[in-house]
View 1 (tube, rainbow, N blue to C red):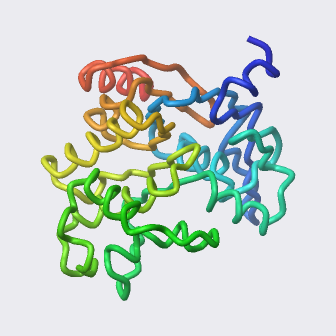
View 2 (tube, rainbow, N blue to C red):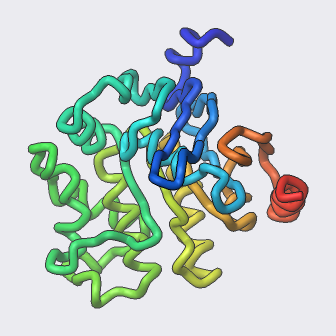
View 3 (cartoon, one colour):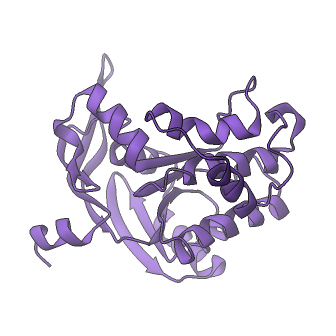
Length: 248
């Protein structure tokens, strides 16, 4: 498929992305020419050993860091030509974020944490919008609570609700289950899976856990800043075996 065709059929397109970090100790190439198209409504897990470039890929794809060269096209917009104000506005409008640390505002209620992304765009959310998305993540009756009154798993579900309420073009998740026990992790991953299956969201998740990656439709493997392979609909055992082979 041509690059033009990929631009019109992809929710997110990375084309020849490189990222070089320079310091007094020398240069480090975190990404060395990554090209990949993420289809609308897909759930992709990005895996690789420490230092493989997976976190840098997510940061460049989300406009949180600028690539040294290459193109990032998200929701029909080329990110690399935007200034910081334009990037901020695009992230508020077209992206959702879920991090391992939750990043909830402790002084705000669950309701206000979830409503915040819409308010930042100048939109006043309706009560039904907020309560509906809280119901989707299993937090009925928790709207008036504050983050400190919730378990870690509940806080992560608030973060998912906050990411989903604006119906972003792409939902980025960086180790979203890293601080959770296995049972709670399963609930969070099932919510991300439902976001693609039921709501048609595009999800890009960085993880080191083969069990988490098995919830994705595709696993993209990185090694030394390059795409080293992919696996569609793999089991946790198959993904773990592929990672072991990659690390060898």
